Amino acid sequence: MAAVTGSIEGGPGRFPVDASTSVRAAQRWWDADADAYQHEHESLLGSARWLWGPEGWDDDDLDLLRVQAGSRVLELGCGAAAGARWLRARGVRAVGLDVSARMLQHSRRLDDDTGTVVPVVQGHAGQLPFRSDTFDVVATAYGALPFVADAGSVLAEVERVLARGGRAVLGISHPIRWAFADDPGEAGLTAIRPYFDRTPYAEVDDRGEVSYVEHHRTVGDWVDLVVGAGLVLDRLVEPPWKPDNPDIWGGWSPLRGELIPGTLIVSAHKPPGYTPG
Ligand SMILES: C[S@@+](CC[C@H](N)C(=O)[O-])C[C@H]1O[C@@H](n2cnc3c(N)ncnc32)[C@H](O)[C@@H]1O
Image (cartoon, rainbow, N blue to C red; front, side, top):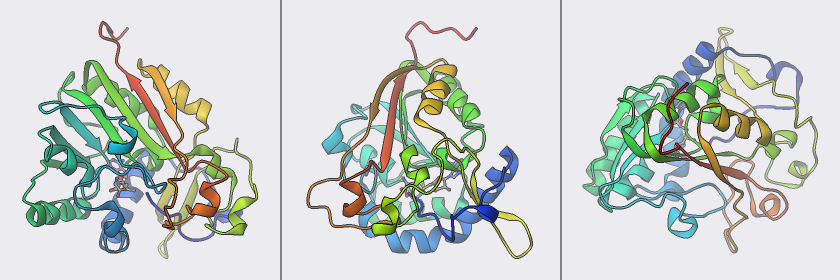
């Protein structure tokens, strides 16, 4: 769950960014920001917890992963892999993948702290270093997908590595958030830009290099991407704000959470008999 930094009031913060530049920017940004991110958010993310989003719901509450001991799970864009660690503590064969080496070092630190070791690999979600038909579930809570220009290639890889009948459970920023200022207060309650404008939000560093990118797709785009990858859409989950959750995370807050969704979780499966055409 990345808080968008800087101004997103339009103009210089919005311009097309290609696929390889987006991956490079994500790797550099998350490597540079990993320490601050974990310092700020680890008290909420925990070391072994599957938190679906700032609304405050764990998977224990929403029961979307529905895995058993022995199931094979990939946490995509795992960061410090708190989700995969929670699963491993329950006997699930969970592994993590992340583009940022520094985020994976935090995962190692949490392995040591908890005694529950998550096998992790550094890589880009659009080129998964796993054999086809390997996982029962591929899941993420805000990992990788918001930061890639080519979400279609990530979905294609998710479909490839899923076993037949396996499920993808993918949590992202709710697309409606794109239309609003990323502000937890009153300023975040007014739509200020077109929901339909897919131009990414991007930041540029002192050397003129793209240093941070978030890409936007509408809800309909996500449905098309999932179906286009050969998956069958099962559910679109829009968790409400958890009652009595007082936490503010970037532009997410109880004030906004009461009025508009903050997280979209796309749940789909690979058909048992699916054969790529
Ligand atoms: C908001 S964190 C999500 C992790 C964890 N669930 C959390 O909330 O902290 C986003 C993660 O996605 C990773 N990421 C960004 N782009 C990626 C890519 N192309 N491939 C794999 N991981 C990526 C980042 O390095 C970061 O660790």
